[in-house]
Amino acid sequence: SPNTDGVHVTNTQNMTISNCDIGTGDDCISIVNGSKNVEAMDITCGPGHGISIGSLGAKKSEAYVSGVTVKRAKLTGTTNGVRIKTWQGGSGCASDILFSDIEMVDVCNPSSSTNKS
Image 1 (tube, rainbow, N blue to C red):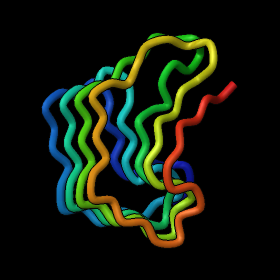
Image 2 (cartoon, rainbow, N blue to C red):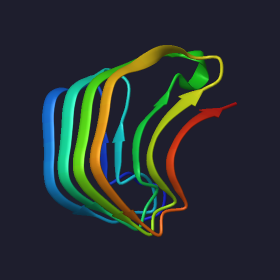
Image 3 (cartoon, helix red, strand yellow):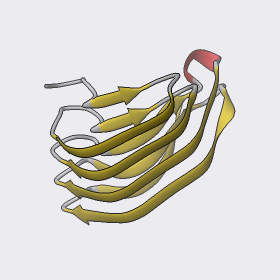
């Protein structure tokens, strides 16, 4: 499924994503603006673009994400592993982010923070 996130979390608080096997043409999990206290655990991801916080700040917007925990995840054959994506010209922040016990196999970019222009 090209250009579709497996799980897209926006403006959500106190959410748990667990025991999922996700394969997609976009982010397996994408956590974006307004999300707080989101936990993803026991996730299998691949193929796809990995697990992302953002995109944050697109079109010069203000975006905030906080309290995200990703643990016990296995990513196989993904473009990215875990990452934080931001847009140039936007504002806001991603805070209190924890990636723990992440296994990656054949992942092109295991960990990254990207800034798109």
